[in-house]
Length: 485
Image 1 (tube, rainbow, N blue to C red):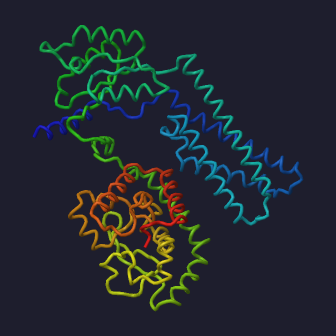
Image 2: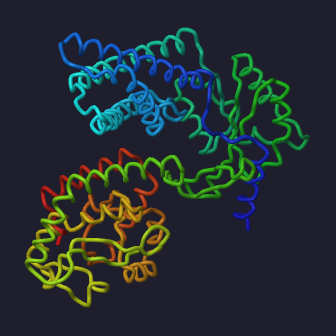
Image 3: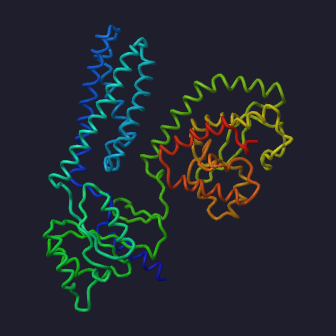
């Protein structure tokens, strides 16, 4: 009952007061627009400079590059920077993110713009132009970021253009908040202005002289915001503190101290801008922008594999499979997908046709596996048709591996968090697989560890993690894996 009351109290608390979200200053607000404007101006300046430099080098450049394609170049940049989140508040909050997302945007722009030129009517465009353009673009953006860094240093350190903040409370939440605030370059941390007991009214309904003096000292220093870590079950005891802060012209930002009520990690969001929601698991792919990024990556990656690899590999492997044993080239099987919805998963057939394929997992030295099938399984080439699943939207390039329906029914009864992995689309490869948990699961401990790795992926997804897993998969396939049978 006490736990339930604490949770209800925090909902009321969040509704009444503001919660610590992204701390936005005038600097961070303006930076995204200044960065966007300077980048667009630099992109166009570099574009036209590259056109004339290429001409001066004696290389022929089609007129469309000078007249029409500059618009396409700009549109692709807007798409790439939006896709990578370069100008988002999250993206510009840290300098390393700006550099990382700039690099990703340039690489993505190079791929899309080159593909556009390749498939345009003027396929004889100058390769020299592309080389000059992207070389100058990298250098100019690098100089732009260095100049921005120098400007930030002068602005924040010489002119003291930082926002002054303080923290109230002595619980673990207050300590975590203080550490976070001290890392923000656009903020100046004043310090603590009171412990836990200083937050709440005394018997006379007033705050102590010490708290009043601390508020006065903070206000004189220029503190604008005080972040207060409040225990949910004492939320009704802060009215005097609010009145004192109003009198001292200080804004209070209340943050619920849920350390004793809810297990970390948790996130707080609003439904319809009105109803507060506490989520006990961080899921980056619940955000529509991240899901869009992952789906676009899947579509582009699977399309390239289908067009440039499977177009010739499929008939070659198909002939070898048909030559060795009777049966179809593809093996399809119902497997558990996102939200536990079954879908047909495709593979190159690596076994003789048998009646146990939907119930019995492949084992080491399995007699059902053909000679060509053994090679396909060792090299992971048997999974290649699943790029059709990715293209159709049943699967993702990276995600938890899909299981047979029979195994899903079995494991969900004996592994508590087994079904959590089904919050995501299944993948051709995954974080568990590149860490050694692929193939047959002889021990319950193996499946338990696989689930732990899958849940880690669900809670920590990034595009960079996907790319890392793909590279690790390729490396493991080249080296060969012990469990690939």
